[in-house]
Image (cartoon, protein in one colour):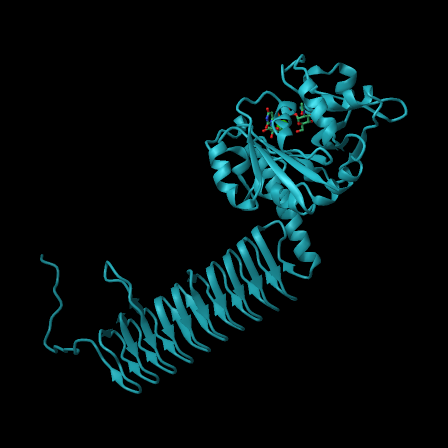
Length: 453
Ligand code: UD1
Ligand code: CA
């Protein structure tokens, strides 16, 4: 089957009150249009044309890499006019599927049944709603055959009472669309060229129209306002949470998790409340994530524990590592198995070897730390001279006393010890003790200043 997909994305989205084109607004951390394109691609070897108008340049730029084609609709004269702009891109022997850049949760399953119903004539996707206000109504005859779609503004009272509505999504043979669309009239309440008018046209030519009912209304919900965006976002998050639980993940509260990308979990993962996952996150067997954590593009191996209020970004965490509470692991952090990062510790481009510990109040950047190293509280790697960054290297088994400043570039050899409060500016060799601080002076006959009377 030759499938040509046309995605409508020309509208401004006035009710969003935004400078950003509506279809670039995110749902689950991803522009709505990107979700629609991804779903379209699941239908196989399809050709995708996106109809753009408002913010055309921004949309082209954002989606240049996806291989979709763009056609511009300079004036938004209606959905029929919009699809007509794509006619030059349609293959005459194909089936055309019309999707919307602002209906982001549509799934390929529903589309597949629509496509198989559209080989000889149009197939539309309808949905039963409690409140049909704003939608085009599906008009059927007594035997249930679809006769027309009537837009709300053109409907009489009897038609307005119909609760089966048009989702907008439809499929039809390309040759029929190419013939029907240029012949649409705009003689209606909105003065627009309605795509939906092809239904009555098809009926008048005695070509049967198939109506497929969407089983899940959230799949076909469109986003026209910030409130609908939030509603669709929640629906997606509920779905993601359900899928995680179905696969064996413990969520302490499925209503308080946000997945803005892809989260994959091995068995017996437990996630406490208010966690956000962005980009690609992988959690190994038995990983435990405490409350209020943000994890972005990272992989955590089996048994790792992240305690409350920690942030991990572009990092790799080994087996049985322990992180937080209140830790910040910035891009390029690599923790080997069993490493430990405690509270108020920030790391960046840092490799922490097996079993090593940075337990309290430290900054470790551009650093290579060996195995079984202890970094004392308040240790700072001074990696930046205001212009350039420099590296720090610390060998296996070294012990860095509390409140040490390691002025990079600098190395501390294996088994070496640095005394608390030191400022280390030159290399410390294997096994040495380094003290880089002024000697303590003790004055015995000193009196504290007292308040003047
Ligand atoms: C449309 C349907 C209606 C359906 C509803 C579902 C028509 C005439 N009506 O109505 O039956 O119930 O969707 O939400 O099709 N667009 C363009 N160019 C245009 C006009 C629209 O790209 O010239 C895009 C918009 O950006 C939007 C989508 O098409 O994403 C739908 O357009 P809109 O004007 O919102 O259609 P509705 O009046 O909601
Ligand atoms: Ca709409």
